[in-house]
Image 1: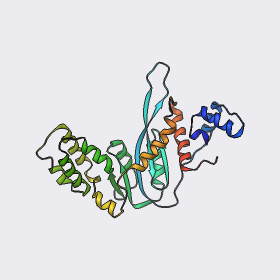
Image 2: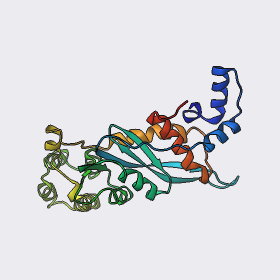
Image 3: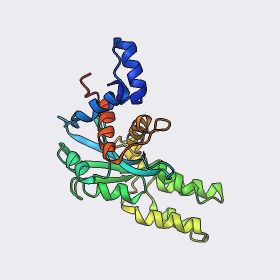
Image 4: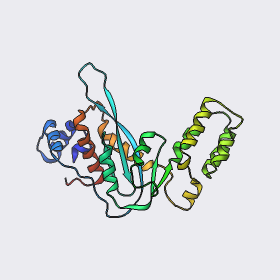
Amino acid sequence: MVSANVSYQNAAKDVEVLTGIYIDHSTQQRLVHRQEFVLPTTEQTVEELSVDGGKVRLRTPQGQECLWRDYKGVRLHGYCTGAFFQDNVTLLNWVNQQILAPVLTCLGDGHDGIWNIINGIATPQQRREVLDWFHLVENLYKVGGSYQRLAIVKTHLWRGHIDAAIEAFADWSTPQVENLLNYLTKHRHRLHNYQYLQQQQVCSIGSGAVESAVKQIDRRVKISGAQWKMENVSQVLAHRCAYLNGTLAS
């Protein structure tokens, strides 16, 4: 359990302090990689989930530039977290084996990779896809210009008035505006009346749950100076998730 939270070197020190027994960092690592960390299956219906990405630094030969590669994190809201390195098939199999609600809220930011994964979850009729409100506002403010105009557009978006939001830029054309309009068009079916969703407590409007989970995972995989062999990344992610999910026996 200790090495799921700190480096193997520090785990060796902590274990010695706690137990009086010294187990060197190499042995700590071997013990982790001998274990099988099984992601939990929820016994209750999953009504919401969110997907986000993180990065891990891969070990490269001495003198070569380090490589950063993506992993995907999934948070089943109120239950548990899973993280997967270049293995979307396992991610989808794990999520789809859960008891999923007839209307399943799926939250994410605007990245294609996130929505490509969500497209494989449940059925199109079952999914309520929601673009993260806070990322939406972040993209709106990238436009710049009149604060008054941006405030008006934000209100339109908050209330689900997408056409009105687009019309507010009818007399203004810049690359930033075009980027926003393309963004709104692309994700239009994921834009909702956020005010109603929040006031009526229909579902979450932000993907903060998975973003927080990814930060918790990164506290282990991005320890200062950490570099990982590609073949070990999946096990390290599974170990960390088992710790965060409270499924480690000791």
